[in-house]
Structure formats: C-alpha cells, structure tokens
Length: 498
Image 1 (cartoon, rainbow, N blue to C red):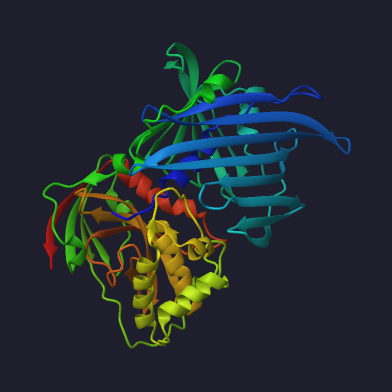
Image 2: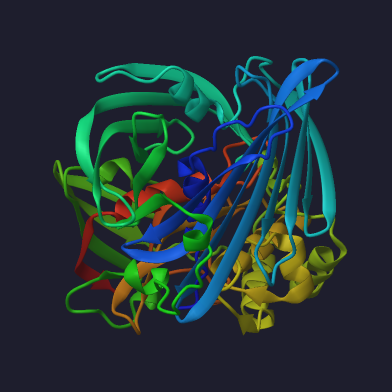
C-alpha cells in the first residue's frame, strides 16, 4: 500500500496540547524547566521540554515560554522524525502577546509561523517550502496563551467536581479553541518510576480536536505527572521525568504506527480497487459509525443499529468532453499548502495536461502523471506542501494528493483532498489514506495519484475532505474522523460487484 501517514502530524499536535508547562521563574533566576517522555502503546517514542522565564519590558512583566518536542516512530519500517519548537510571550494573567512556531521534519524543509498581535488584529507570517505568506485576521485581545491552563491550576487549584471553560490560541494550529477543564477525583495513579501517587484526575476537551479527551493527573503542588489520550486505537502517555531520562536514546524498537493501526478484514477480496461497487458492514463499539461516514455521490449509508451501518461505495468514472466548471470557485484558490503560482507546480501541470482543454481528460492525465513522476515513495515526511513535492518529486499519499490538487487548480479545475481508509491487498487490511477529488460535470470525482488507475473503485472509504485553505479549519482536523474510527472499528466486506 503506497500511502503516507499524517498520523505523525496529529500525534505531534495532540502531544503539544498534552505537554504541561513549567512553573515561571522570577526576575533574573535561571528559567524553570520541565521534561517529559512520550510513550505510545507503552513504547517510548520521544520527549518534550518546557522552559519558562519572567522578563521585564517597558516596565511590564512578561512570561516567555519555550517548549520543544521530538517524536520518532516507524512507518512500514522507515523512520519518521518530527521536531517542533514553540515560543510564546504572555502577560501574568495569561493573555497572549506573540508567538513563533517551527516544525522540522527531514527530508522536508522546515516550516515556520510567526504571529504578532496588535490590538484586535493578529498578523500571521508563515513560511512553507521557502514561500512566505502573510495574512491578518481578527483577534480577541483577551485570548489566553497555551500556558494559561497550567498556570491557572497552579495558582488556583481545581476542586473535585469543578469545571472551568476559557479560550486559548494554539500556535501549532494557527487557530483559537474553546477549552473545558473538569476535575474528577483523587486516585492512585502509576507514575514513570513505577510507583503510585495520589493525584487529581483532570479531563480537558478542546473544540479544535473534537472527540479527543486529554486526561491529566496532577499532584497537590499543581504539577502534572502524567497525561493520557487515545489516538487511532493506541494510547499516548506522557510522564514528567528528569532531563537525563527524557534524553535517553531510543532503543531501536520504535513503534511502527502504520502497521499497528491497520484494520484487518476476514476473507480478503481480490481486485477490490477495480470494482464498480463494494458493500461493507461497519461496526464501532459505543459509537454510531454513521456520525463518521459522509454521504455523497460515492457513498451511501444505511443504519443497521446504534453501532453498525451498511456502507455502499460506488465508483464514479471521471467524465470526458465536459465544460469547464463555473462554480466552486473557492476550490481553485491558492493556499499555503496548494501553491498554484509555484513554477514547478505550474510546469508539471502543463506537462501533464499535454495541450488538452477538456477538464475530464486533464484530470485523468494529471492523476497518471503524479503517479508516474513521484518515483521515490517514502514514509518519512509528515505533510509536505505541493510546491515542495513538485520540486523534489517524493513522498507518499499526502504528497501525491496535495500535488494533484494544486495541479488541477492551475487549470481552474476545483479540487480538494480527502481523508479516509484504503484497502491494501498485501496486508488484507484497511489503513489511513489521503487522495484527491476534482469537481467535474457537477460532481466531486475521486482521483488517487498513488494508484494512477483512472479514478477509484470500491476500495476507498471516505471520512472527510478539506480544501486546505488558510481561513478554514486547520488541515490536521480533517484527520480526526479517521482517528475516531480507527480507535475501535470492525470492517466486514458484504459484497463486491465488478
């Protein structure tokens, strides 16, 4: 299965939400530090560091917080490493003043975002694939920083049964989110050294990542000693540890997240991707799968029970000899991830179209072109933009999907990316995947640059789509239905029609 996982990007994003902040140092004292290890299904896969110091600027007290995370996992045997660094400045009561966010994911180039607040305006300067884009959005000057929650709990501890709500701005998402913090009760909890401690369980929910609940365990001093979150059927856990423990070299048995999140099916079918129709029974425990499965021209859903549905996936052949689209104009815009003005993107689009003026023919040629030209299939990139993929011609499913979407837009063919599941014959299982849809003859028609088969058959299950726009939800949020489904799903193939 030639697919790239965006799992890692979501893991880092949620890990950033989990990471407890250090206490603030005073005056010219050495900054306070806090170190954490991050485990996934019991295996150590990375670490985090937080440093907070207090400075005086123009007579005002400012808290400067820096935190960094490093995550290393396996994907089909290949190593994927991501490092993020965030720096924020905030007032003593937690109001955000400015921020800087950097993500390194070799071999992709670094991405960087700087946010500067001036009254009710936030100016965001982002650099992706060496291309700088600036936008200004409305901003609530009372918006809290990411460190507000931890500082609030230290200064005004939560009581059992108490709930608090507030809004913070997340630099890694470039978005605000509503936060709800609820204190449960004191309980005996195992910490990193294997001992137990009586800690307060606190549950945190954020609107930007619906369905994800972070469970924190806090001591009487307000220190977070352990956090937990459930992702893709795996449990991510962090522990507060010493610097020495956090920086220990990984033993080499890193978790292979791609293999561990595959959904096996009984009696694996043959030629599922060439089928005209596939009917599935999707079952999830304690949740209605209909809530996670969109309906449209390629999918219909029939409820069987509160925990089970019948899903019908129908192939749509990309049409030919059609008129150019005059609607869906928001899906032809350039974005930070779909750089339609990039020289390499435009050149690949020109070569792929080969002089055709028919949108259907162009779409098919571009799908085949992306499949053929991205010769180096690797699993070590989290999420590269179209410009970077066009330059280096490597990556996996997200890179194929982004480049194809951008190339379509250069010819004014509306496009978007899709997140869902794809069937992998060599594993006899479904796994997370991304592909592309083009607006052709009044329908969203699926195309898959990783397969290059002239559209798709019944082997793709759609969960969400995104225009990867700068003003819309953060791209990583498109993967949440996938995360929620993979946490507890059974897929049965009822019938395949060729």
